[in-house]
Length: 384
Image (cartoon, rainbow, N blue to C red; front, top):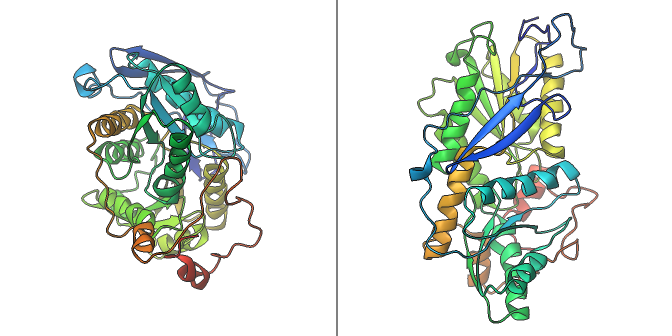
């Protein structure tokens, strides 16, 4: 058992911000920077964690030295910005996108920021466009709040925007790209990993050479997106000093969680660090944490640390600013050579549209057709 912040926890350590019930979080705008101020009650030094409890350790304050006004260039145009999230039935996940939009809007009041969702919850993309039109705008910028380029931002969001153009032929829409592989995201993960080198998070002082990284992505039916997840994990590992990095996914593609942990254990590390590459918390992030806790109980000889999801951080806000400027200037560049939708179009294949509130594909498929590698390979390059 290790001692962290005066609490005697199980050997599994969940490195994450304190839950809202135990911490007060305030956001204040200073120039174009964001400060996260957290006040948490002192831990009870006589508390003993139950075996199933995950220890929470607040991350250190954000370094704002790189996030002052010069780091965020002025926008070329005061177009309203639609921030399009995937959508979830989970209230906390929905609120995370709304908070993200509010914080980003507070950095620059020159134009409105309108959050909306592709599916499963409201407001919809059509609602967001209608709001901009009702306020008299004829040009708007749209950014998908998505990590990688898969079906949703290549096909589904654009399909909704086409519907909006039919309803409002007078509007001009500047569509930007996803977060992707950005220096700011690499910097954020690098800083998170540096936190784990501190004595309070690594009391046994396990070296990086004895540590394996496990990068966990959402998983997609788009090979392009899955390939970028693997590339990002590799870039994070290069020059880091860690023994190895493995990549796995929560669903759709392979390897899945169980196999990812099994691959990581083959290196016989003393420590395993799990990186859930998600923007916001939700059902899947909790699933990763629960699976990691179960793995720790099953394989106690390897210490497991699970980092939090990316969350609302200055690095992400900076990337978002870059994406907004790109879209306004018409400088959006994506790698389309390996896009399966482009290949389908070149071969004369058709795909179906994606409409809000489950009028397109359902997220409750029953049996998983991609549960096996064979099943996934049969579908990987198909367009629905």
